[in-house]
Image 1 (cartoon, rainbow, N blue to C red):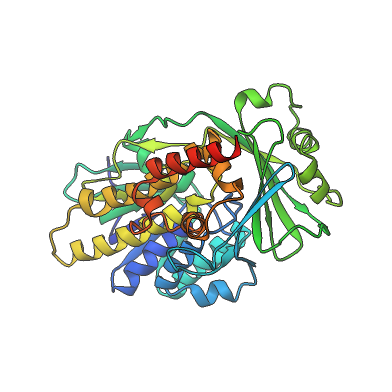
Image 2 (image 1 turned 90 degrees about the vertical axis):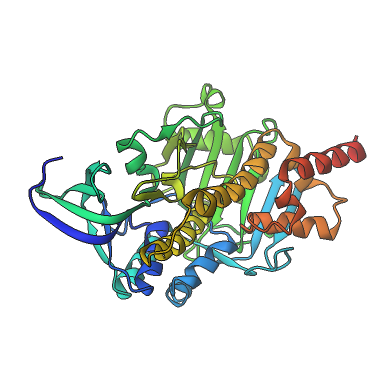
Length: 415
């Protein structure tokens, strides 16, 4: 790669979203030189608005908790599930893992800017509206080609690169690391509304997950914000959209019209923003790390939005990578596979087991089963709160086997 204008930095982070901001702040707090390159200008829209409790552990670790708490986001203390007349809720203050009792539901444009601004306050340099267009990891140290908004270019040499580019998946694309996901292709159609919800059963401090009454693989999210607005979206496989209007607003409304409980909750809503869509979002990679780089969050793998695990995985990967990279830069010998990839995947695989169980209905049966013991509900609540790496939890240590056994018990006692 020919080099024109060149600079040298210790660490370059691609992307200023939650993973990038937290990784950069953690490394800066350890005394390292960190540059973030961000393609967009903040604030900018992003999906993934319902945080899990575990997220705040990493926000706190990065010294950003005060800034987040001062931003006025909607408190979230759990998750609620609805299917027809059935309703079940889980309290994040009553979990096996004894983690944070609450978190927030956030408009990501504001939340991501709060984190990025705080990273800058801590001394991290962020360059907005610049894009990494080419990379060279064959050189003694990684070299990135960067294009500015005015189309001028420069190169930056770094000792290490962290890719936190999210759906942009910069290094997976440029290094041919992308691998197919084994999840079926699904599509989400979503918008923000002025909700005007006065339904007595609606809890603004919880995300509401509603299942379509006739198609259990079709579900909706309702994420209320502190300003009287709500994020509403539907997720379904491609075949479920075939008989729906092509217009996204009409499509979303048609799904809601088929779901009386949700239609009732949203009966006073003002639909004032055009709907958007995202599809085929599940992604995977061949490796999470290589010579001079590591992949964080959605840049590495994204499962499914159903349990809001994306930001949690992103922040967890940022915290882990920052700690390992600090040791490496101090001259320690580290093993990115055993210390980063393997333990990170352990939690991702826990989430994966419950996502798969959601779509084959076994986990739905568990969620709505009225006879679950308090201890089991606390273990499940821990996972819903994001503590998918707590190996003390039997439903984390053996997610597939435990879920299968519990689902069979629920089925046998309701048949």
